[in-house]
Length: 199
Image 1 (cartoon, rainbow, N blue to C red):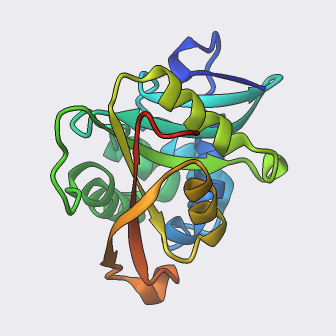
Image 2: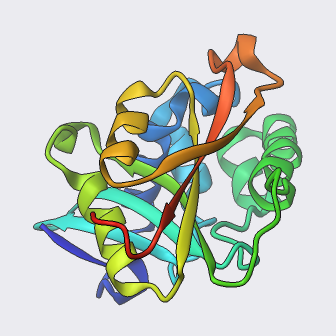
């Protein structure tokens, strides 16, 4: 398995990245469509390849995550491709709702200098349980310049919480999820890793 920046892959892997993203976050995305392939095509345009890391297993994208300074956006949603794949009304609604969630939603704490944000951690179903997320996050911590890293995880995603704890992340805040009935998530948990701790 090779971990590299998505922008360094010598072919277009946007649809593969989007497919992993949809599989990883379908509990949040199924409101917009239950058709995962349609969703993957709709979201393929949005990824900032300069900040996404991919775990490559041969030609397959086994996992994804992004790391930024908390100001640079990981994703940028455009109406036209969403409308093209989801229809005019649903595409417009998807743009309105997810732009707020993905691009405009502030963290419930201040992003300070030297803090990196890790976002959109997802592993392809065929590669789960093989340490893909651990390798991705380990690579980020080893190569990015930040002194500390924060991430958000659903409280119900207990396997991810356990993984992050093993990597040295500790919870420092949680917020009540507004749409818990739809998402099945009670709280969003915020965890932090300080460099210098043992991976």
